[in-house]
Image (cartoon, rainbow, N blue to C red):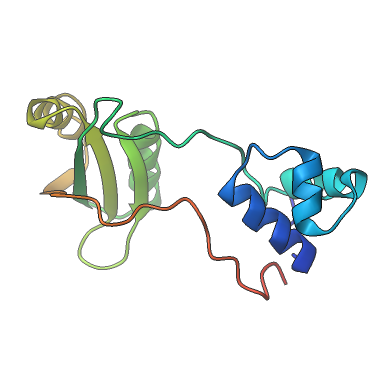
Length: 161
Protein backbone atom coordinates (compact mmCIF):
# COMPACT_ATOMS: atom_id res chain seq x y z
CA UNK A 1 0.00 0.00 0.00
CA UNK A 2 1.25 3.48 -0.75
CA UNK A 3 2.26 5.53 2.24
CA UNK A 4 0.66 8.90 2.82
CA UNK A 5 1.82 12.11 4.42
CA UNK A 6 1.52 12.19 8.20
CA UNK A 7 0.20 15.45 9.60
CA UNK A 8 0.21 16.86 13.13
CA UNK A 9 -3.05 15.13 14.06
CA UNK A 10 -1.72 11.77 12.83
CA UNK A 11 1.43 12.31 14.90
CA UNK A 12 -0.70 12.91 18.01
CA UNK A 13 -2.73 9.77 17.29
CA UNK A 14 0.40 7.69 16.70
CA UNK A 15 2.12 9.01 19.83
CA UNK A 16 -0.96 8.24 21.94
CA UNK A 17 -1.33 4.74 20.48
CA UNK A 18 2.35 3.97 21.00
CA UNK A 19 1.95 4.99 24.64
CA UNK A 20 -1.26 2.96 25.12
CA UNK A 21 -2.78 0.99 22.23
CA UNK A 22 -5.74 0.05 24.42
CA UNK A 23 -7.21 3.55 24.42
CA UNK A 24 -10.84 3.73 23.36
CA UNK A 25 -11.69 5.77 20.27
CA UNK A 26 -13.23 8.36 22.61
CA UNK A 27 -10.05 8.65 24.70
CA UNK A 28 -7.87 8.76 21.60
CA UNK A 29 -10.08 11.44 20.02
CA UNK A 30 -9.80 13.58 23.16
CA UNK A 31 -6.00 13.35 23.12
CA UNK A 32 -5.84 14.25 19.43
CA UNK A 33 -8.41 17.04 19.61
CA UNK A 34 -10.92 15.29 17.34
CA UNK A 35 -14.42 13.92 17.59
CA UNK A 36 -14.66 10.12 17.69
CA UNK A 37 -15.85 9.52 14.11
CA UNK A 38 -13.01 11.36 12.30
CA UNK A 39 -10.56 9.86 14.81
CA UNK A 40 -11.71 6.33 13.95
CA UNK A 41 -11.47 7.10 10.21
CA UNK A 42 -7.91 8.40 10.60
CA UNK A 43 -6.81 5.37 12.62
CA UNK A 44 -8.38 3.03 10.04
CA UNK A 45 -6.53 4.88 7.25
CA UNK A 46 -3.25 4.65 9.20
CA UNK A 47 -3.86 0.90 9.48
CA UNK A 48 -4.86 0.45 5.83
CA UNK A 49 -1.79 2.29 4.55
CA UNK A 50 0.50 0.18 6.74
CA UNK A 51 1.70 3.02 8.95
CA UNK A 52 0.14 1.13 11.86
CA UNK A 53 1.30 -2.45 11.32
CA UNK A 54 -0.57 -4.01 14.24
CA UNK A 55 -1.17 -4.04 17.98
CA UNK A 56 0.65 -6.32 20.42
CA UNK A 57 1.10 -6.96 24.12
CA UNK A 58 4.69 -6.24 25.16
CA UNK A 59 5.85 -9.13 27.33
CA UNK A 60 8.52 -9.24 30.00
CA UNK A 61 11.17 -11.50 28.47
CA UNK A 62 12.47 -12.73 31.83
CA UNK A 63 9.01 -13.29 33.33
CA UNK A 64 8.03 -15.60 30.45
CA UNK A 65 11.17 -17.69 30.95
CA UNK A 66 13.50 -16.32 28.25
CA UNK A 67 16.16 -14.45 30.24
CA UNK A 68 19.04 -14.98 27.79
CA UNK A 69 19.50 -12.61 24.84
CA UNK A 70 22.13 -13.53 22.28
CA UNK A 71 23.30 -11.34 19.42
CA UNK A 72 24.65 -13.52 16.62
CA UNK A 73 26.61 -11.99 13.75
CA UNK A 74 26.40 -14.23 10.71
CA UNK A 75 28.72 -14.31 7.71
CA UNK A 76 27.53 -16.26 4.70
CA UNK A 77 29.83 -18.10 2.30
CA UNK A 78 28.40 -16.13 -0.63
CA UNK A 79 26.35 -12.97 -0.78
CA UNK A 80 24.32 -13.81 -3.87
CA UNK A 81 20.67 -12.87 -3.75
CA UNK A 82 19.44 -16.47 -3.64
CA UNK A 83 21.67 -17.28 -0.63
CA UNK A 84 20.57 -14.13 1.18
CA UNK A 85 16.91 -14.94 0.49
CA UNK A 86 17.29 -18.57 1.59
CA UNK A 87 18.91 -17.51 4.87
CA UNK A 88 16.27 -14.84 5.54
CA UNK A 89 13.42 -17.28 4.85
CA UNK A 90 14.88 -19.88 7.22
CA UNK A 91 15.45 -17.37 10.01
CA UNK A 92 11.90 -16.03 9.64
CA UNK A 93 10.58 -19.50 10.62
CA UNK A 94 12.57 -19.73 13.87
CA UNK A 95 10.66 -18.34 16.88
CA UNK A 96 13.87 -17.91 18.91
CA UNK A 97 15.00 -15.20 16.46
CA UNK A 98 13.09 -12.07 17.44
CA UNK A 99 15.08 -9.61 15.30
CA UNK A 100 17.04 -10.13 12.09
CA UNK A 101 18.88 -7.41 10.19
CA UNK A 102 20.70 -7.54 6.87
CA UNK A 103 23.92 -5.64 7.55
CA UNK A 104 26.75 -3.81 5.82
CA UNK A 105 30.36 -4.44 6.82
CA UNK A 106 32.14 -7.67 7.75
CA UNK A 107 28.99 -9.62 8.65
CA UNK A 108 25.88 -10.25 6.58
CA UNK A 109 23.21 -10.61 9.26
CA UNK A 110 22.71 -9.65 12.89
CA UNK A 111 20.23 -11.76 14.84
CA UNK A 112 18.77 -11.24 18.29
CA UNK A 113 17.89 -14.61 19.74
CA UNK A 114 16.04 -15.20 23.02
CA UNK A 115 16.32 -18.50 24.89
CA UNK A 116 15.86 -20.05 28.32
CA UNK A 117 19.53 -20.69 29.04
CA UNK A 118 22.94 -21.44 27.52
CA UNK A 119 21.96 -25.03 26.81
CA UNK A 120 18.96 -23.85 24.81
CA UNK A 121 21.21 -21.58 22.75
CA UNK A 122 23.60 -24.46 22.14
CA UNK A 123 20.66 -26.58 20.89
CA UNK A 124 19.53 -23.71 18.65
CA UNK A 125 23.04 -23.46 17.19
CA UNK A 126 23.44 -27.20 16.65
CA UNK A 127 19.91 -28.00 15.49
CA UNK A 128 19.15 -24.96 13.36
CA UNK A 129 21.79 -22.35 12.63
CA UNK A 130 24.79 -24.56 11.89
CA UNK A 131 22.66 -26.98 9.84
CA UNK A 132 21.66 -24.21 7.46
CA UNK A 133 23.88 -24.45 4.41
CA UNK A 134 25.87 -21.44 3.30
CA UNK A 135 26.81 -20.14 6.76
CA UNK A 136 30.55 -19.41 6.86
CA UNK A 137 30.81 -18.19 10.45
CA UNK A 138 28.79 -17.28 13.52
CA UNK A 139 29.95 -14.89 16.23
CA UNK A 140 27.77 -14.89 19.36
CA UNK A 141 27.65 -12.20 22.03
CA UNK A 142 25.58 -12.58 25.18
CA UNK A 143 23.79 -9.59 26.70
CA UNK A 144 24.69 -9.08 30.35
CA UNK A 145 21.73 -6.79 30.91
CA UNK A 146 19.26 -4.62 29.10
CA UNK A 147 19.77 -0.88 29.41
CA UNK A 148 16.92 0.19 27.14
CA UNK A 149 14.25 -1.47 25.05
CA UNK A 150 11.55 0.52 23.35
CA UNK A 151 8.82 -0.14 20.84
CA UNK A 152 8.09 3.58 20.61
CA UNK A 153 9.36 5.35 17.50
CA UNK A 154 10.35 9.03 17.68
CA UNK A 155 8.02 10.33 14.96
CA UNK A 156 9.70 13.28 13.19
CA UNK A 157 7.65 16.36 12.35
CA UNK A 158 8.20 15.85 8.62
CA UNK A 159 7.28 12.15 8.72
CA UNK A 160 5.54 10.67 5.72
CA UNK A 161 6.22 13.49 3.33
